[in-house]
Image (cartoon, helix red, strand yellow):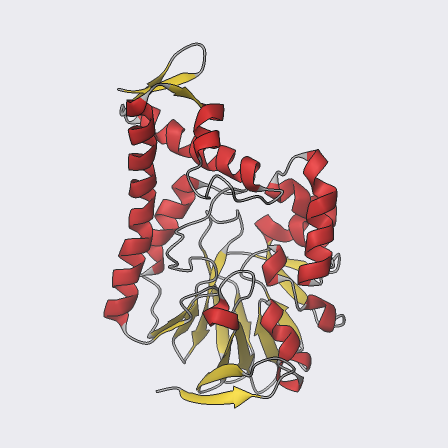
Length: 309
């Protein structure tokens, strides 16, 4: 069972849960976006940080002495502490490597419209301490980091990003499952590098990782009971079918183009404004429409108008 303690910080203390050589520092509201949960792994040879959320800036020496960073994937909220570790090697799945190397690479992975990029970069720099890591190196599925008395094993779980990866810490049996975050919002696959089909497969596979504890980067935090983990995983995956149903409901009310469906919003409230929202909604809805047409539940005419089949 984990022992809980408060870590002294410049803001309200972070809760800390320890599992042998693994420590989890819970970000604000259990790591709810824009924050996240920080996992630290203490090998006999190396101290490793798994991702670097905003919370990492308030941990102190227990984070700042990290000698290696292994990223589950590359997004601004996972890079928010990298500026504190300028000399630590950063390892990123090879499919996300270009996004780690430069702002141009990250912007391409997001696929955000050119006009929105300056505002997006300014937001990332001011709110997430964003700085690219051109020194980052790539890893692949099945990569193992032997840290002395503890290992980290990579399970490639794409969908959220092309390189999204779950990281299993052995022998503790702790799976850091990144942004398969089991949140009420549901899966996010709105980037240019995202894939709804891959995300469906990753949700089905993540339960097969041989773990006893599961840690999400966002919101849910730590699971120590497999039954509760599986229940929340099922509810999370069900969001995909709920989104199918919502789109079909919109089409039943009247035939619509992709642009009209985007204006209705599938993920975000109509009045929610961020630089990436329209692009994210467009890619998300497009992927669902492709599946609905492919399996015969919807059809599209030559003018790009969708109807239920």
